[in-house]
Length: 332
Ligand code: SAM
Ligand code: DTB
Ligand code: SF4
Image (cartoon, rainbow, N blue to C red; front, side, top):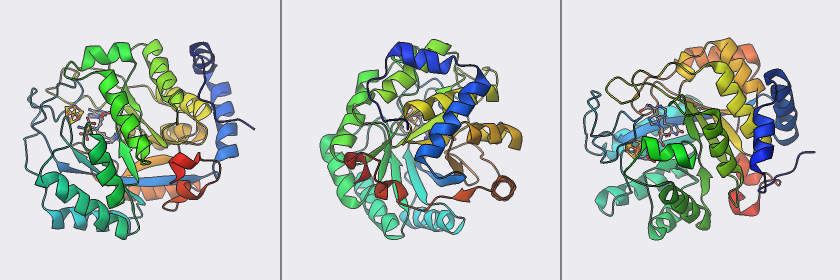
């Protein structure tokens, strides 16, 4: 039985990542079956509750105010619209609802109070509530926990070295600091990254090494393929091969056996065969719904058809919180 380790060396990560792909997928599938029920996939839905106009310069992001991407700065979405979207997501079979805001750091004003209200209303619907609001103070993390937030998404995106090349307005340590505050307040962490931004294989390994040596592994690890949005500095990046997604997912699965590994952005450009490879490699979570934050996602009908074809079934809400092999601090 594989064990949950936080002391992986860079050499070990490299050895796993460089395993021939078919062997790597076999090894990851074996670990996957030890820690998770086969064929069970977590279904999550995103909603951008505050879109665009962000002060940060993340080179991949259509919501940065610095690039002309056609995504305009909007005010926070009204509460009733957000609650209606959460209801729709639940009716469509989602068990996790994630609210995203294009903020450098969570606000200290009525918008944040509204997020707290929303968190508690949506948790009352029986959905796992996640939010991604940028950097947090300890006090904000505490308030989110009290309101019933289950998870907080804060991606490390890439290796520390490559991070400096894609974002200049904050540091890797800022990211790690927010992750720490979230974990200290016993909110589960969702943290992963993006491939296809021009990074090297070493950068991808570096990201995975940082994630798997955190004191507590992220409860979920989103693996995104860059969506090259026209107007961003990354508009001309080529499509990520599905082999690379599968390799990243399989390595994450082996390094963080109990975590949910999410086949995230980029799924819209994958056919069923490519997605099947990623599920074989240990992915057990996806985003459904017509949009991610600002870009198009897969059609719901298609996703349902895929679940049927592959014999996949949706994972129940709060299952991670109940499972014994999850460290107590994450399970709360
Ligand atoms: N502003 C907050 C933050 O940066 O944490 C929350 C929202 S931000 C859009 C959430 C995540 O979306 C980013 O960390 C990044 O990993 C992902 N993302 C943004 N644009 C993307 C793109 N074009 N392709 C793939 N992932 C993207
Ligand atoms: C994550 O890792 N990917 C999601 C979610 N966490 C917040 C966001 C993907 C965004 C893709 C570009 C867009 O739709 O704006
Ligand atoms: Fe802003 Fe987040 Fe986009 Fe960066 S990734 S520009 S912080 S919304």
